[in-house]
Length: 255
Image (cartoon, rainbow, N blue to C red; front, side, top):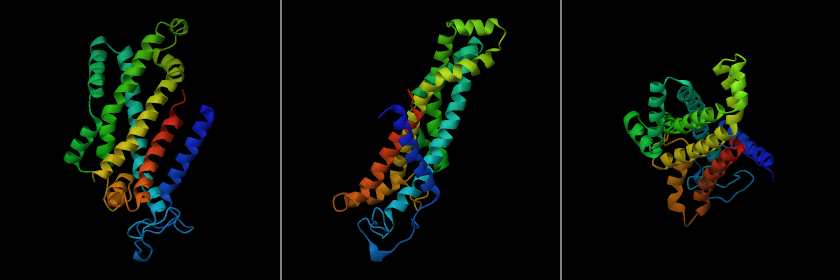
């Protein structure tokens, strides 16, 4: 299967998750103690949990916090990274040096520790998770774009474009963006996958969102006691998290 087919399958899976974030076949909050720990059926596609709640609906509803975090992080990181990369490449030496130092320092920030600190300061939720991810993910974009700008300066077509009177920012838009997308897409795919894993990790610790809302990490934490007696309850959110992280990487990384 070629890369285009991989990307199409990944995008189809993500489309299903986006639909699931706003629609579920059964109310994921409904508790029915008469149908606890039921196997998969036509009514309950992945069975029910220890409280009789529909597992498939809870998985679909749990996509919402992950997709929101991914959207916030990618848009913000790409925007900040692009502006910082251009500033490093074309800004005054003093300014570009300071921004490069900030980017290199941000690379050393442990994302999970940053998320824990922000959650402690501002409360658990998507804002803390998104801020922690943005703080550490804008730097690779900035440094990669700055490196690409340095390489472009040695290219004949770049020199010719400037010699014809084109503004640097216009030349960046025409030449930098198309050449940078394969590299930026690879970084975006990795960051999107990391966002899914981080949201689930903090959900497992009880820091990602309201504990009453379905969320993949929180489901893993809640179902961990059934790991040996009803392993499908734990495997469902674990596999969903892994599959979505992989799909995001394949959909965005078009190298």
